[in-house]
Structure formats: structure tokens, C-alpha cells
Length: 120
Ligand code: AMP
Image (cartoon, rainbow, N blue to C red):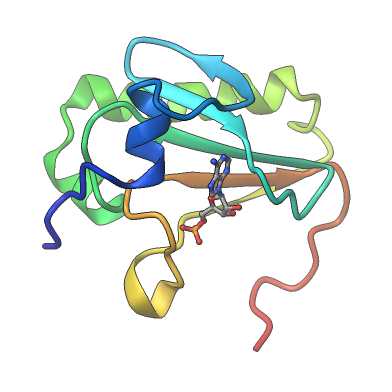
């Protein structure tokens, strides 16, 4: 397991050092628009806890945090009006997964057909 880097950019957003374009927040979750949107809707959903990756989150987060995270995704896609048209959730993980920011996040992409699942 990689150690959590307190200087990562999402940690700085969470502690208020860097602003974000917030779309949702509750006790355990923050969601904001991706700064480099790759679809009409491109939102990043992050837990407020210090988890490096989806596997770290699944292994170590409390049941309350895990529930809050999934509930938040459901609320966000409903609020964004993409629940019916569809969307894609992606969580890039580690080197092979192409993860740039080492704080667990899920990308929600929607608002148009997102294209092939994997392109090389
Ligand atoms: P990943 O490659 O899955 O780690 O994705 C990291 C994502 O964070 C990329 O899509 C970036 O565009 C996005 N990103 C980086 N910095 C910011 C920021 N300050 N605000 C919003 N999104 C960001």
C-alpha cells in the first residue's frame, strides 16, 4: 500500500489551500468539476478521508464513509440529469491505471456517448 501524500492536489482542495468548482459536499464526500473536462459532465468525487486509491478505500474506510460515497454518486448523477441518459464512472489506480492524483477519486463522465471503454 502506498503512503498517503498530504501534499497531493486533492488534499490541498480539501484543506482549502486550492479552490475547486464544487458540485456536491456532505460530511464524508466532496465532488467538483474536473479542471480538464473530457465530456460535457466531468465530475470528480472524492472522500474527505485520506485514502490513496479505490482498493485502499474499500479495505480501510468505515461503512459510513463507503455508504456516503455511493449515495453521493447517486445524488450527483440525479442532480446533473444524467441518470437516465447514462454515464461512466472511472477510478484510475496506480501506475498501470494511469492515476495522476494519489487521493482516491471517481470520475463521472456523461452528457454524451463516452466512447470505447479502453483505447490504446
Ligand atoms: P487521474 O488521472 O484519475 O488521477 O485524474 C486526475 C484528474 O484530476 C485529472 O482529470 C485532472 O484534470 C484533474 N485535476 C487535477 N487538478 C485539478 C484541480 N485543481 N481541480 C479539478 N480537477 C483537477
